[in-house]
Image: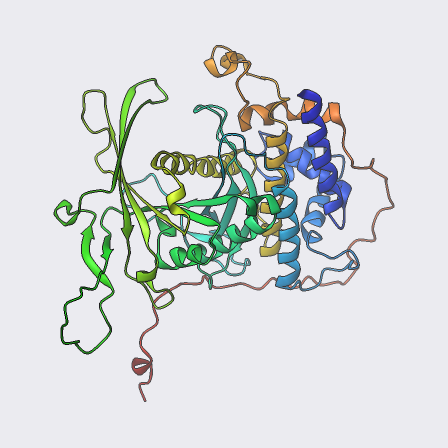
Length: 489
């Protein structure tokens, strides 16, 4: 098992080494420094890591030449097609290391958006108001910066308390003119197409309430091998499919009726009897007994939009309630889940609940990436360099995932008594692997070549003037007034 894991990790590092078109040695050293440094507060501090033998200026050169083709050696304007090809190539490499299915008969993918705040960066282009959660009550959950969409693969868990590992497959910056939900669904489609093994079995995508609109349901409806699970807000209105009667009635003018009776989530009087009910006992992380009840309505529709017809997208609706041992509710509100797609009936109620619970592993990845992998610490004034840094963070996290079975516990003196460090057979968490990754790299080596000193560059010539960087206004997505109101003449 140990030799197989090390071989797997070496193979991945070799593929990544040749994935870079320029500055392969500097790129690998930067990734190794990022994977083994937990105390750095800025990206430039990674140059102080013993695994990084080059000057700190090489970090900027790695970022600037990431998307350059092999035959290009100058920083020119990069087209979107070149970026897409490079990102798809990286997705194909990462997806090839997804583990084979053992217990499940379906693949699970997750997608979500997260913010990269750039409040004090006026020279960065395309900044806008993006969502960012806040712990201070009364503040608007927004910030100024960029928004990124992450698509990931969820591996099978060995046990319920396994660490929240994911396999990040795709990362794209959402431009101010784009819709994050549409970008995420396209990412899922590209991830499924990246490997032939994904197409052989059912692929299930999961998202939060933002991914439960008619456009998402219509997108999944066009992919026969995909099912989609998303959360629904507690105040939404759904409808039962309309069934025309055989009675001859005079047809009224206008569009024929498409929706049946109303199913209002916050008004139980509008509900019909559920088609399925499932109960099971479980325990919380603190070993407290719980009872979970799942009710399911198999055929519901929602109102459509200008882009998608909602009456054609039939989905399943589930209500999940958690009870304590004494029969009282553990949470005030129930959890509503939507299951869409042609193969939605192939998933049991327990499968749907388990898949959505695993979606929160993506939130752990965001937290670990921002606190330990400097995901949102890039201070570059170039948006392309910022996008490259997020790609390098994905590669670094993938290294940690592949090394999880060879990592050893490296607790600090005040952590030795914690139960997590006493369980030697337990799968290591991302933090534990990062603490021991420096030792792992020293054992397996690196494909990067030793540093070759060169002559000093000529530097900036006398009389050369630096061009002042352009300042960009913050993009505000306000609703445009009607065209008839714009014409005041």
